[in-house]
Every structure is written in C-alpha cells, then in structure tokens.
Image 1 (cartoon, rainbow, N blue to C red):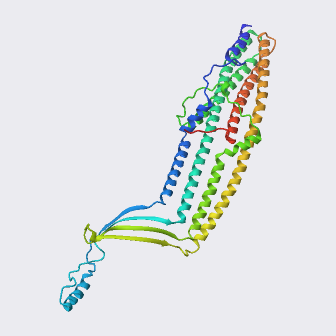
Image 2 (cartoon, rainbow, N blue to C red; image 1 turned 45 degrees about the vertical axis):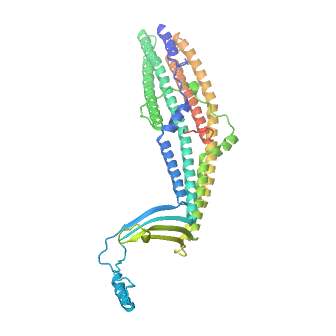
Image 3 (spheres, rainbow, N blue to C red; image 1 turned 90 degrees about the horizontal axis):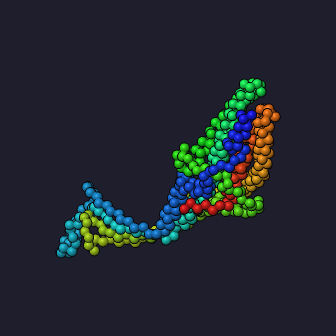
Length: 449
C-alpha cells in the first residue's frame, strides 16, 4: 500500500499534475533588441545602406566643378626644330633690310619639353547627371527599405526562435518530471509481482513505458539543443551559449486585431517602399536613356606654363578657356534600344509592385487565420489537460488502493503527459503565431538604434 501511495506523492512532487515552476523570466523584446543589433544580416544590410548613401553623395558631386593639376616633362631627342626653317628666312630678311630686325637663333622643338597647367571644369548641361542622381537616390531608398525589411524579419525570427527554444525546453522538463513517476511505477510493479499481487506482464509494460519515455526525452533534448543553436545563430553568439528561461506567464498575447485592420496596417510594410524605389530606379534609367538624345555642354579653364624649361614669369603664362559641346547624332540605334529597355524595366517594376501587394495580403491573411486557429486550439488544449489531470488523480488514487490495474494507471499517466505536452506546444505556438502576425501586418516599430 505504501509503495502505491508513493506514486501519487511522487507525481505531485515532480509536477506531473501541475505544480507551478520557479523560472527566470526573460522578455521577448529584449531578445529582439539584441538580435537587430548583433545579427550579421542586420549589420550587412546597414553597410549596404551606408554604401548607397555614399553613392548619392558621389552622384551629387558630379554637378560641382573639378580642379586638378596636369604636368608633363619630356626628354626630346631628334624632334624637328622649327628654328631650322625660320632662322635662314629671318637671316635673309635681315640682309635685305640691312639691320637685325628678326632673330636668327630661334630654337623651338615640338613638342615642348614641359607643360604644366591647373585645369578646372564644370558641366553646364548634362541630362545624364540628373538621371544618375535620381537613380542613386532611388537605390538609397531601396537599400533603406531592404534594411527595414531585414530588421523586421530578424525581429520576428529571433522571438519565434526563442519561443521554439522555450517550448522544447519545457517539453524536456515535462519528461524529466514524468520519468521518476514511471521509474517508481516499474519498481512498484516488480514488488507487486514478487508479492503475488500482479502478473509479470505488469513489469514488462512498465519497462516498455520507461524505455519509451527515455527515448522521447532524448528526442526532446535534441530538439531543445537544435532550437538553442538556431537562436544563438540569429543572435550571433556561440552555438551552445545559454539563454535565460522564459516564464510561461511572460508569453506575449497575440494582437487582437480584425482582418481589415491588419490589412490596413500592412501598408507600413517595407516591401512597399522597396517596390516604389524599384519603380523610381527604372524611371531614372529611362531619363538617362532619353538624355542621350540631347547635347551636353561644359566649360573648362586651363592656366599654366609651357616651354622647354620651367620659367615662372608672366611671359610664359598660358590661359585657355573652353566651352565644350558634345552631341551624339547617331550610334547605331543603341540609345533607342536603351530607352526601350528602360521602359520595359519600368513596366516590370510596376507589375512587381502589384505582385508584392498580393503577396503581402496573402501573408497577412494566412498569419491572421493561423492566429485565430491557435487561439481556439489553446482553449481545447487547456480543457484536455484539465480533464487528463483530473482523470489521472482519480486513477492514481484507485490504483494506490488496489482498485484498478496498472494498465489503466499507465494509460492515464500517458494521457496526462500527452495533454501536458500538447498544452505547452499549443501555448507557445499561439505566441509564435502572434509574433508572425505582428510581422506580417507591420504592427511593431523596429528601432535599430
């Protein structure tokens, strides 16, 4: 009798019939904040956004004047000396005039030994520069939207990964609480067989139940460790780093929102900004292609010195001002082809935006439906657990009094364990569905700073 009564006592002490656990609560939001800061994909998307921002600065700089120095010094050998042609003519003129009116020692070879100049140039009209600047801004908007979408996805993935780990860890705890009960039942069955109060099949059933429980616990441990590795991967930490236990009382409630409100809120999804940026980028390509049909105008100013040696004086200064006009009149139809390709890219981007709209709507509807189903199944899981707990309590007392068989007690215990596992799975699944709905409907504001 004492052996049988100890089963109920052990079950109560182990928590199999529902004794509250002492846990260290951890907020899901704190996990998400760590993820959006440490995650490698989040960091990479931030670097891409900074790269695009610098590209905008580069495109803006093309409108400003450029200043540079060009210097050349050459060693000339065997070049034609203009003096060889001019000196004889000047000598003849001097003889005719009877005076030295013209120099006869001209020494000038081309090219000159050195040429040094300071050049500044600036575009006056260049349609491609405006298209390039518009395209750079569109790319920056695209990268910013991509970063926002990545952070929103990481925010949800980190919280769901934490919930998956908590669910798996809770399953291990349930099996840890169940194993001592099954072990004790196997010991009691052996005592009953030794006393002649039970047949040997009770021991065999208890042994089989114990082996099955150990196998189930080993699988639960594997799932828990795998979930922990996935969570640490998102957090960019060592795979086996431990995390604080999540208290079931701190599980977030899914958002209470109608389908219509969820669809309206999804207009804040970053994918819409990505689609708009893609359309603007294609439009910029069209502007760049159209600008090829227009002339380009720029001005340049050169100031420097020329000669066979460096002489810094006013007599050797050279200043050249230029207005440069370029107009491509024909290049084999390449510009027309580029413009047609840009038009096709613009239409493709518009179609992509329409497809993204349908994908977001489907995502919201699927997440909303999954949340509602999980909410309903949690009530059923709770009712199942309450019934299984009450049934086990009654059967355990009857078994302790010798009024029922071990087979009935084992079945009640298995039903209770299954109900506990199902209730845990359902409770954590509801929280995960709520997190996914928050992502799909863009209900959370993600702050990466």
